[in-house]
Image (cartoon, rainbow, N blue to C red; front, side, top):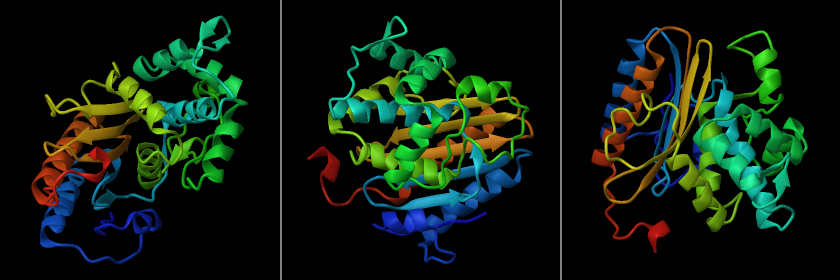
Length: 279
């Protein structure tokens, strides 16, 4: 288990140094998460990042976990990046359906067929993987279509189609900061993620009334949830929670998300007026 607390140091978050100073308050949050994970039978990986201050926390942050359907965030981001550059349109018709409808089915209902249609139009898994690598997103692999993934022998420690919690949160950060897609496309993507119908017993379960934009992932023995949660002062926290094996994985994700929300809300109250992204 590893914890990192680096104020205003996003690059250091990605690098994950072996030793880093932390305030007593951050140590408390780390300990809460460590204690929570230690009571669970599942293998749990966690990363969370305050998108304004750069404060981070991670537990097994550099350990790869299967992404399952959380990879759909990356697929959507690549399609929207190509829309931004005029190469595609959300009104394009692909296999008899608009890209807009396929995107909604993929992110709101986690439709695997819609996902593979969009993925094929983009050039397949290698196209997504190479785009992420070219843009500096490391620690995340896209190797197979969803159909191929589901047909394959289940191995929850397979490095294919995996991401570390830190890498997933870095992808979310780059999306949110409009480094991979333009602000209009980011807002479109987050709006779809806010409508996610799957996994209501995960990240959102213990956060009633809290704005959450997320995407779930599920395989036999695997339960994931990644996305954004908003704090009362308007700050957003990017979160990735991966769980495999054991029992009560959705409950573990719900409790972890609640602990992260409470920890960041109480410790890092924004003291400098309006957050930069709201100006």
